Length: 255
Image 1 (cartoon, helix red, strand yellow):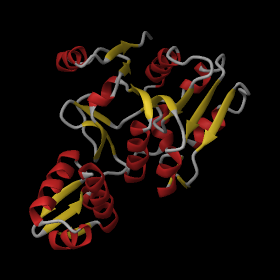
Image 2 (cartoon, one colour):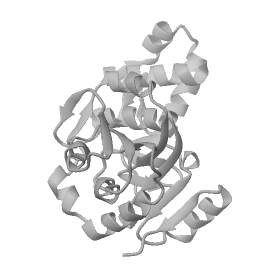
Image 3 (cartoon, rainbow, N blue to C red):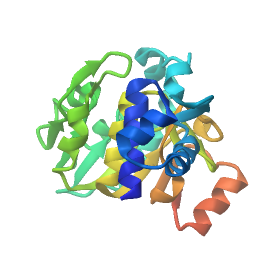
């Protein structure tokens, strides 16, 4: 119950950009002490910031912009391809998988060319890349095209995701840290990524070495919710220890 209320409060704050404590108490019919506790949780997630008399969305004050999709696609191509080649080994015939919109996940389509599986995605590029392979059934999530990420976004996607049994979700992130978990810079993508994490059985993070130790705008998942991390170089000792202690598979792709 509390978790659902916190999610609703978060959605409201992100929508309104800035909200007073009194407004939150009135809208959600809770006391100020309850609202303050819920806000602390959202502050830890990184999605809101406390201001005098209320809270505001961190997205509202952020000047950070996504790099152009073309620039992100051409960065670290060899490393991303190696990561995706290893990730494809986790897919079996008949699997229902989710492929994230991050450019790290895109090369995986070609490495699945010999598999027969269903790909659920909101990535326009994944859909296009899968066209030559009739053995790959592609289900595109509905929404509006976001040109910065070449992905479909919208509030209906979260509800749509609840109708699918995702066996394996292959996720990307803008940053990874032990404290903040998996973070990204797009509010629209944030909601979708959270829903995928919630509705998938096995979650695999695909990330090149430059993402470790970085924190972006919003946390869409903690590292505890990931079962496998696939990267191109060994991260520092603190990440290796965390993976061992939490039984997270750490896989290094050979280039």
